[in-house]
Length: 503
Image 1 (cartoon, rainbow, N blue to C red):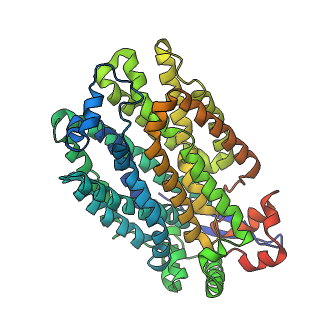
Image 2 (image 1 turned 120 degrees about the horizontal axis):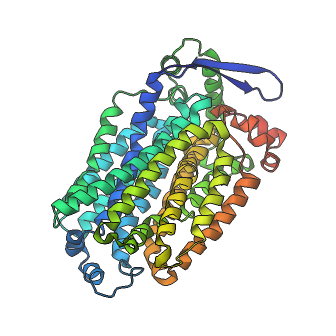
């Protein structure tokens, strides 16, 4: 697949324009598809853990008290899974991923994005083996921690890799391959859970957890054949290799302008690194705009209430009379909507922009959340609203929560800044995973109104503070985006602009 393109980029301080030439090559898509397999690992784990914790064989072995509560004749659906140790099974992964994301930042800089993804697959394979073969709860939790390290490394490296190899005008679409694989992983996991629980009631959970090794193996083998990003190669002093890679992924030898732009960014980043660490640079005034946006996008992604909707969907389907098949039906329907809607984002994000997708989705999600739990007779309507909600999340806050932080940092703080985004995501995912079942037990249907309030806050944030980054070359963000935004431009004095530039 190839198509010609020329990206126009404004030069700071003048009206001059230059073009980055090349084609959309099959190789850049191959690299993107393989790197996005990191999202498949993450998505499979998200989907598999929820199903496994509902399997009787798993509960009998590790959480017998939850098993007993689950099968009480008149148990409150909101409270049957309210158990701190069970919540720790899910949330321990995210706590490990939080810590690992900071180490991944340094690894991305020193070893490169590709090698960091390779390490992610190794940790994920190790964690898979421990979880699938777990003989006790301690072994299970250690396995989850290894999986978390893999997730932290993969979620740090893959979005950066995708943003750096992509031509500016399809960067959104290529980056969203990561989120597309997350949704595909969730859907596959739900189907796997259904068949393993039916075929092997007592040990099906082992097969479900062991299946996580498949995407990890694909990522490991795939990482042996894809290239490193040109930015990472030039950053580590390998300019000739960076040029060769840029020529390959752009399908042309005329890459001088883009290579020079990358080299200038790397030189500026190296000069700043000689003066102070990336963590200290993030504390500077001119680093605040991308840092605030990155952290806010990740926190808001979690406070959309996606976990509440995905958890409550099976209960709503069961009220329609599907009984034991309700969980499968809800998983397949919502999972299918999730995947298809993410495809919409791939098509739309570089045409209509990031802001419009996010604002439209806030309105759509607010309608779904504000309906709460009106009663069993409205179950069909609520199921439709769940699908409306999931679709809006899937083409907006799901993929853009990763895309925007990966493209807005200058190179000098890109890996370190993005590690704060990843760690923020993992921190709030951990908090929600650890507290959500208890919140649902105490708040019941009012939990949906809690998330609806957050959606209003998110919409206001996007409207006033989020700049549009569609079509902007990744190393031109400072001059083209931040210095021109009505609010964020105040963080860039003349001296500050000269120091941070497009580094």
